[in-house]
Image (spheres, rainbow, N blue to C red):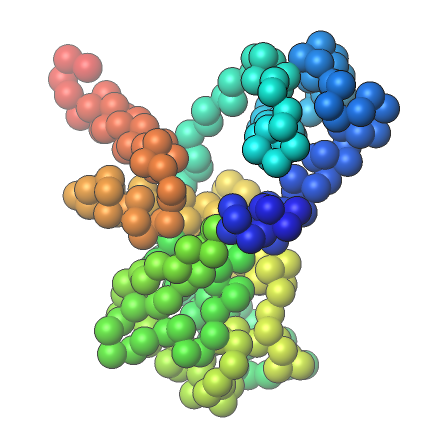
Length: 284
């Protein structure tokens, strides 16, 4: 775990996930780590698949095991990595669901249209608008948005400083509507330092609290699909590409380490092109 934290610069979430994966494997077999063979890991793979575990979950477990054996080879003189001999199932690539621009507009205006909860401070709807505007404006991850401080938003450069996965810092541009929404919320809530988004007790909002805010407002719209903060991130990326942004720029904005991760959004735009072609071309 110290190796992951210090040398690999892994995030606390990754360290926790890898620790849980190693413990899960140890619960399945009592064979010492150095004596485990490829067959032990094939049996473990079979057991996970038989339980109906998602392929993404299975690959995460084996990513942790593979990294651990790389560590054993480097530090403990292990000559063979038995995990390498196990062929893992490929992840099914699903096209991300995205909102139309009209649906985004409907969602972003929902907090100011529904009946206000009199028990809540009057600045809360302004905060909720600012949260959703910033999500869509910059394509942030939920954890990234929750961790923002007031000092991370620069009104002069119209950007926000984000600490992403692997503790990699990046700077994302922020649109004028989002900046104005943040300014209105901060003035009304008297937020000048510390956490950017606060709850009724004036403490930092948790990841779950922000997710529930979004879920609440979706119920007051005509949007038919289940919405999560990540779908606003998907919508941000897809709409950027639809309007002509290049893939590398979108990759940087999203904080993706690999371009292949961003390329899934090109499939979404191709699907839209196909639908437009089918609806418009006389010989489609």
